[in-house]
Image (cartoon, rainbow over all chains, first blue to last red):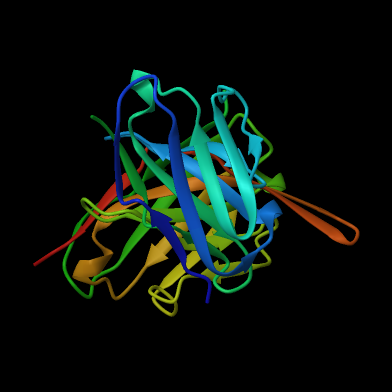
Length: 109
Length: 126
């Protein structure tokens, strides 16, 4: 069973700074099957990245994804006020068919 | 406009049943796999169940296997989640989500859960 572990649990940064969020898998995950989501309070999640590094429609280019195997990263190059939210990684596979990480809360310092 | 609208949530006693619905509009419903994802109060996202576009393949998280049943009616553009033997730990906001999966000979491409509903709240309590 694949478990996704995100770190840090909470990241405190200021607008304009760079954010680096990590997602580590307990077993190798195809980079084609790794996605990232953003969720703001009271809202449904929003797809940011699919295939580990491809931005979804309408996502600003300050968001980027990278990684392979068991280590994946979501980077936000210059934080805007609207970027402070909770971020989740998610894998698509066989056991279990889909899994989310526990989330990283990005808060304003 | 592409849209998903969940309904059917509410308060139910432990051991009870509930059926959630997710009405889809603005896209060819039968062309997409669909998932249910839940979020307990103050917690993270938990994938619950998924179904292929045709409805021929279904998948469940271990936490709900044997109690929940996912289904779809492509003629009505609607996804369902039948929840039986409900427990307190099933209390959550339940979201339906569209999944973009493309299967071609010798390859499969996963484009993520790209459309989400606004969620419906299920509370299991006596």
